[in-house]
Amino acid sequence: MNRLATPGQLRASLLRWSLFLVPTVLLLGFMSGQFAGSGPGNPWFDALEKPAIYPPPAAFGIVWSILYVMMGVALAMVCAAWGARWRPWAILAFVVQLALNLAWSPVFFAMHDIPLALAVILTLLAALVLTIWLFAKVRRAAAWLLVPYLAWVCFATVLTWQFLELNPNAAEIEVNNAVQRIEL
Image (cartoon, rainbow, N blue to C red):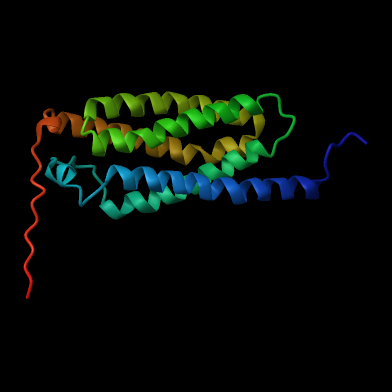
């Protein structure tokens, strides 16, 4: 007998990893956006000129939720691949690219630094390509689960660049946080 585990044990391992990693990745993505004040409702962001390709704001929550679930499942597949030669490197690459992903929202929305946000997302793009390559060495299906994420990051990179082109002095935009409250 050459197997370390039965197919049932492998499925159970994948399920356990998925039950932990999918909610964790989803929660980290949600927290990054929430703490950064991302999206509409952020006075600074609302004051920016939007690119023509900027999708409806609701699309971001839907797309990112789906992508974070796919990312969690892909990572679970790699984590469940005990004994795979490239597994530790693939996990490390995933953690690095996820950290870059989570850093983008605070840099863009909280720090109001679009040039730095562009540098972060370009670095994320390179880290993601490396992650997909390493995931393919461990589990090809895990790599394919990250391809839609790569496409979205490419789109987000273009979008970030367009925000920079349309708003070269975005860091200097004064935001009036005054609130008018009327009680009846």
